[in-house]
Image (cartoon, rainbow, N blue to C red):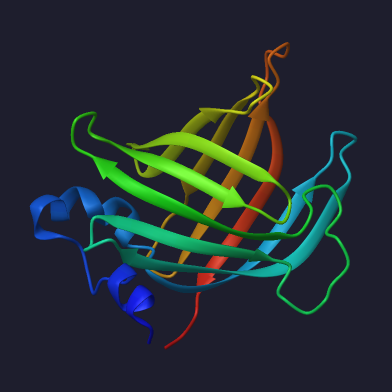
Length: 173
């Protein structure tokens, strides 16, 4: 392992905010996913993917990599496009919430959100550069699975539109 990888990686949550860090820390590990992209015309496209979560930055953050579809030279995934991006989730005790940054350089997609627990779910909210609201939610969370919803509400609209949903199952060790 290079010094960079060794210094980025952490073995677990930092003890200073360990309880709060478990909100996303419970996802640490490797996941197989089924991704469904939803078009505005009600079309649907399904593809397999994978998600990997890990502790980083002395256990003060959780980072992930989302790959859709799985790397195999697959053609562009309709509606949502191919994803090969990473999210950095950092707990901010000053606001009792998570500051979230998503980077997908291949598609030129970058998002900033704030994430908080909402009941048994986790909801991340932000806006696009065009002013559309975004809401990404983790629902139906268990030790072995979760459902992720990616929604958008254009500035001129009154309703949220589901763009992508992901059913994830933890890989067996």
